[in-house]
Image (cartoon, rainbow, N blue to C red):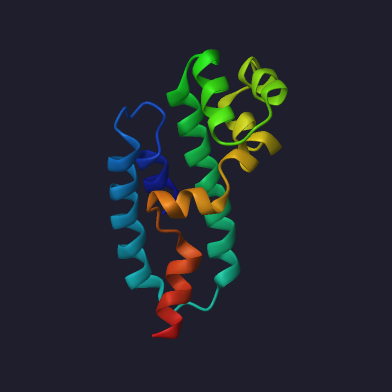
Length: 129
């Protein structure tokens, strides 16, 4: 499962975030049809954490230039000094994706608002029906 998600969240796959989310949602919904009888919600929570970090990594790479990163972080409510400090960071994409600044700028609600379907909420929905 993670291998296919890695392909759909590859940094090399240059598609719009809307298209990527659409493809990921199709994949998650399909797997939930298969896993709905499972009784391991903790695994889905861990998978969701990893999944959101992959998405933050992609967005960070899409922003490319430090100036764009500062602008986007400011737009998402990060203080100017922190936005500048993190935008100029030369750390790897994966490491930045776990940073407190990026996790605060792109919280779980941000991804829900973008329409991303996550494993745990989808599993919970199947359990109530």
